[in-house]
Structures are given as structure tokens and as C-alpha cells.
Image 1 (spheres, rainbow, N blue to C red):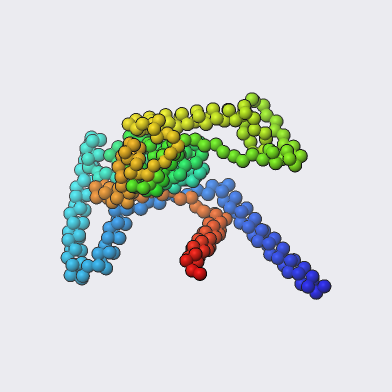
Image 2 (cartoon, rainbow, N blue to C red):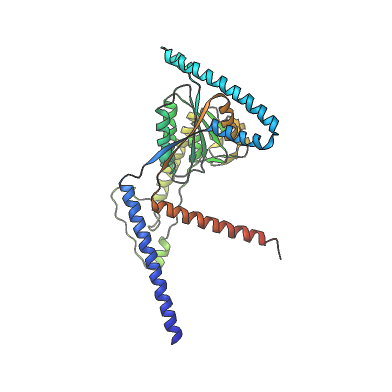
Length: 360
């Protein structure tokens, strides 16, 4: 009997603790929702990559070179900086006096704006991308360039269609668009990538997957076996075709197949329009290729990494990384902290399990 009493007290404490946690999380979620209703906007952050790379280089030189060599190098760099400052001042004065648009373009050094897109299945990064592009287009001129670091395995057609349309805005404003793929640009990712004036990929980056997929589980037979009715009332012959709980008919299956084929045709047409030199029928099988293979199929223009592209750009232009970041509510920050902690814990467990395989 004493054991049951202790167990009951323990259970009561546990239930109380759980309800307290739920109440706290509910309050935080309500506060987060209020923030979103009030307009939880973000802000643009800009990093001058020329200065950042110079700082990294200087740090390495200061720690590697001997004192005498370091002082000589500093003296030489200060002299170069003074010369560059004088040149910049002359260009600025020339621009002020310029009356012709062409003269003004010549007077200003080229700018390269670096954007980043890390795509998930819903292409949720498009929310930031659209803001970044709007900001860049407010300042960029025809002599400038946008360099997009793109990573995406693809996802929803309509979401990636919107992301591709955002990149089209850059081209519509006659600004050069370079896209770099270091890891993967497949399916919807390649739908975006093929818009580039210059498409660059790392040697083993994955590209392609020009195809369309529809898949879902169907529990109709499970429901039928357990005498569970599932009713759907619709108006319109094809309002529902494939569902998770309704019976799948051949007519509905054929309709979805027709829609998938049509979407695939539009996808192929989009890629062909933006990269006319490739054999669209040969690469639109849903297969993927690494960068070295994609180059021989005219799917990309050059083999390189985004790091090399940016460093080369820094040698001839002012390079700015532009990011639009939404302000995170308390709920979002808490969720991110929990997600990060859980991810680290799982990674640690996975590493431990992997290492223990080599011991008896």
C-alpha cells in the first residue's frame, strides 16, 4: 500500500510538471503569435567581403611572417592603400562631373552582390531572397553583378517556381546573374540554377533531377477492413483525385498522371528556354549528375567553387554579401535552441555508436 501511495505522489508531481511546461510553452507561443500579428519584420545586413578577406589574410601573415618581413609588408600595403584612396577620390570627382550615363558607369568600380539560398522542400528561403533582391535592385546598375550561392535538393513546384521568378527579376533589370553550386541543385534547385548567365558548379556537386514526382500513402483498405467510413463531398469532376483515405480509382490515377506529365513538359520547356545548348530529352529523365558530368552535357558553364568565384571577384570589384534576416520571436529562439541541443545530442550518440563498432 505504501508503494502505491508513493507512486501516486510521484505521478501527481510528474503530471503537475508536464502541465506547467505546457502552460509556459503556450504563453510563449501566444507571445510569438502577437509579435507576428504586429509585424515581425527583419532587416538587411551587408558584409564587405573585400575587407573581410583582407582581415583574414592580414591575421595569417601577422602570425606566420617574422617581424621584419611583416613590417615591410605593412609599409608596402599602406602605400598601396594611399594610391587606391587617391584613385577612388579621382573616380568620385569624375563621377560628380560626369553628365553622360556611360561616363558615370565608367567612373564607378563594379559591385558584386553575393546572395545565399539554402532550399528546403517548401523553398522557405524565398521569403528572404525576395527582400534581398528588392534591396539590390534598388541600387544595382547594369555594370554590376549578382552572385547567388545556391544549395537545394528541390521541393514543391509552385514554391520553386516563385523562387525562380525572383531570380528572373534580376535578369529583367539587365544585371548579370552568376549562380554557384557547391553541393546540390536538383529538381527545383536546377529550375532556379538554369536561369544563370553563368552557371558554376563544384566538381562533385549534384545537378539535374529534371522530373516531377507525386506520392502519398493510402489507408483506404485499412479503413475498409476496420469498417470505418470515409466520405468526401465535392463539386467538380476532378476536385479530388488521389487522397490518403479515399478509394483510388483508375480515372483519378490517370488524371494525376496527366497532370504530372504536363508539369514535366513545362519544366523541360523552362530549362530549354534558359539553356538552349543542352539536349533536353537526354537530361530530363529524372537522373542526376555530378559537376564534371554536367559540364560535358552543357548543364553548367564552368567547374569551380563559390569561394574561388568570390575571391576572383574581389580582385576586380567591390563585393558585398547581402542577407535579409527576420527578427526571431522568443518562441522561435527557444525552438531553435531546443532543436540545436537535440541535434547535437543525436550527433553525439551517432558518433559514439559509430566509434564503438571498432571495439570489442
